[in-house]
Image (tube, rainbow, N blue to C red; front, side, top):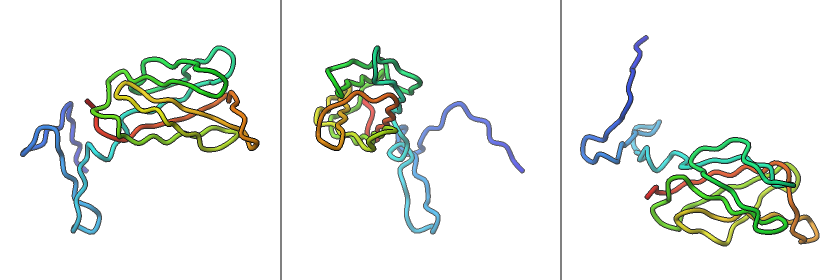
Length: 128
């Protein structure tokens, strides 16, 4: 077995682009496009607090069931994708995307906003 030790991968044609051949050999994927650009887990009750994260600097309580999540390194545009989930009510949503962050909103079955204890979110898209 061989071991490959690296600190940096740089594309041969374009420094920011590494192409990986798919399992069947007939398709390719851009490696940078396929990795999460951020993830976060936080407690949204009481004094909100980040439990753990990657590429998130701060969170803010914007009101009951509404949180603002801010990046350490901005996205390249505001057309990225987020996935968000919590223990109690499943998927959350956002309707406010900027290059520096996004909001996460939570409601219960009757449509009322509510604070939730454990929230996870990740981001896919282009870094700035």
